[in-house]
Length: 303
Image 1 (cartoon, rainbow, N blue to C red):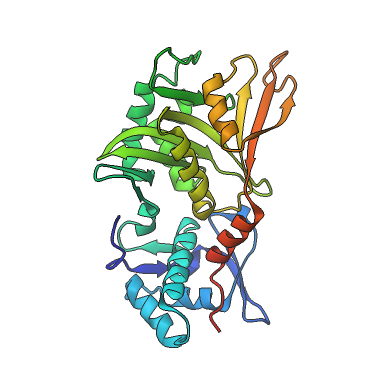
Image 2 (image 1 turned 180 degrees about the horizontal axis):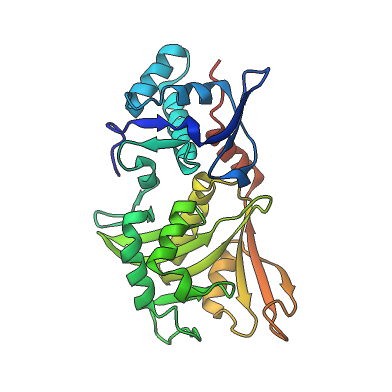
């Protein structure tokens, strides 16, 4: 996990289309590079964090400044709120950094001394691209090979050859269109799930690729679902899995999703062409979990 100690955030006010002070001390803003988010209303403490982002203070110095101002608040509450503010606004390009964005490295989950889950970042692109190509998932007709240790799935709605070129992948990460959830052994990719992010007003993400060891798929699914709402720019309430009814999912693969709580949402007739139906399975987040995510992302006022 990368240390956050020496990173200095810079608030790029010029990356706002407009800003407006509200009577209740909230602040309404519209990001220049993500106008699809519409207006964002942030509270007083979130704005105070942004005002400290002048390129001279480290993250921990901002935490200390906020602690000095709100002495009755727990330091861990303040630290979490500062981190969540900076991570969220970094994704909207309201915050930039002297060097790399440290929050791209968050949410690493250690399994053992050599294995861990982590969200893919820009420097992983070439390795992700090579892993995808090696898996054979870009073949015109995708077939699950007998005795394979890997489950292979790709959405019928994507073109894997063009969508996973190096240029396309850099665009996906830069614009936050898709996130990659990866199982590593040291620095080698062993399994991968990619999830396409929703665009408002849609709140449903969807699987694009699954290239996962059978023994790890369930854990990787849970890791993806647990972390996706925290890192997405937009609110997510469900994750969809699309099945081309002419190229049905293997029973073993489908059973893992069913066991994890995915249920059939419907079948779209002729969605992929004449007599070519699309089945949708979906997993819906517990509203209490989403409420907790929103609390952590909203930078509550300390009073």
